[in-house]
Length: 71
Image 1 (cartoon, one colour):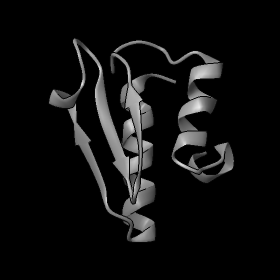
Image 2: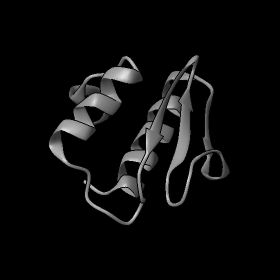
Image 3: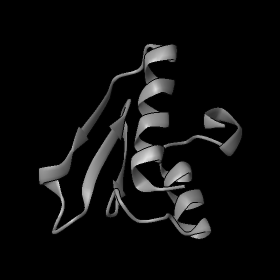
């Protein structure tokens, strides 16, 4: 899954669950940006690149979500 797809899925989940979600591309260095979901946050790498499995699961863990939540 690409970073952009991850971002879209989290935003869709937030809308469905009425949770605040915001994307701050200017808060990271270079191609990184900060995604806030409720009171949790994670850093998303370049939106054009594929996310590695460990990175993907780490980001979900930081947002207190599971793979099933956004599948």
